[in-house]
Amino acid sequence: MHNVIKKKAKDLGFDLCGIAPVHSLDDHGKRLKEWIEHGHHGEMAYMNRNVEKRIDPRLLVDNACSVIVTGMNYYSSYEPEKNQPVFSRYALGRDYHKVLKDRLHELLAYIKESRPDTKGRVFVDTAPVLERAWAVEAGLGWIGKNSMMINKTLGSYFFLGLIITDAELDYKSVENKDYCGSCRKCIDACPMSAINEDRTINSNKCISYLSIEYKGDMPPGYEEKAGRRVFGCDICQEVCPWNRKAPETKIKEFEPLPEIKSYTSEQWKSISSNEFYSVFKNSAVLRTGYNRFMKMLL
Ligand code: SF4
Ligand code: SF4
Image 1 (cartoon, rainbow, N blue to C red):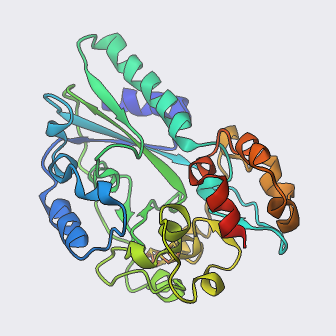
Image 2 (cartoon, protein in one colour):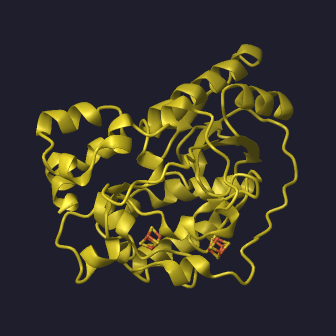
Image 3 (cartoon, rainbow, N blue to C red):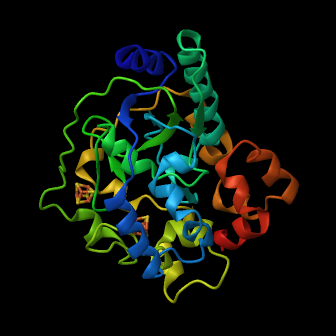
């Protein structure tokens, strides 16, 4: 069944797929609790909720036995011109939540064809699940010093989507090796010094968090360090040697929106609220809202 599921995941457009048996993620849970205790989650109060569920998926899905972890490459080699604002690569195309969820539901339906009693839930970045920890358990790669999931073939520009199911599947032993070695390019390149030596991110300093989630005043020097970044930040991925050969995404939905490719800073600055909501109606940028987006452009 393991290989059958992997083959189906590939047919559905996923680049990576692995399966891990469910257990309590005690080590990751300990690190998560320390991260929260240090206040490194900023205003993301939701990180402080359901911590036990994050650690043990059996509290999320009754009789959970297996975690199927998929990865989907979103890398586009598009580079903005000097007069254009910079969006994080994951937000160049359509919102990944729906793209991945639709395919994961198809994968779950496929499993049910041969095992009709199977129950499961699909997770894409919206529920209390430690996605990266499960990706490591399923053999998709390692968590880099920049806290991103890294795969030797894809690099780190890929989304994770999970199915937690009560189906008992066959599991393969996985390598679980860390290939960061003595490299510290991401730590040295981060303009905000937001990467902690213990491979966690201090969200209070991170441009990604500050430009998307944070509602308050920016820390001193933010504008200069963030430059033209209006939604997210990829600096610690751009410098990572494992992304040097990142392949182009095969998923049409992740191709950059035509407006992102063509609009100049001046055009964005004069965009109306209606046009903003029309351009980004199927994009992750939508959640930042018009007023906040306009503030980031200044
Ligand atoms: S996303 Fe940007 S600001 Fe955040 S840790 Fe990476 S390089 Fe630093
Ligand atoms: S830049 Fe170097 S240290 Fe940072 S995640 Fe990549 S390989 Fe690891």
